[in-house]
Image (tube, rainbow, N blue to C red; front, side):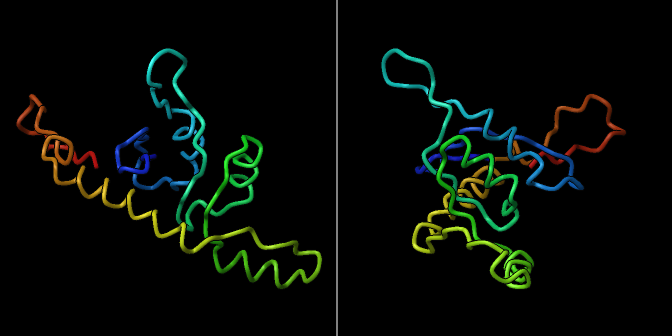
Length: 137
């Protein structure tokens, strides 16, 4: 899920429960379309991505850098240990701003609001009574 600074959803991609979140990262970014005031194409490239440790991978950081998108993603402990183990060949740690990372709670609040909405939280549109309702979010 991608949200703007006010907590409004920009794009949502649902995946099965056994799929890692980072595999859908490209689809979430591709689905972003912010309409402009007046004429013009919708904006599809955010200025910055603030994500949790689940999205801390070299591939995601490379794709963001190639698109010119700044990233605030904390590094996982195993990545820090691997860099330290390689010594001077391990490279520099990625930039991380803890003050900016505090704004990530906007996403969590948006998810909480969506879960409160009964129409999204549980689907009751099944016609067959033998089939239990499916949980969507």
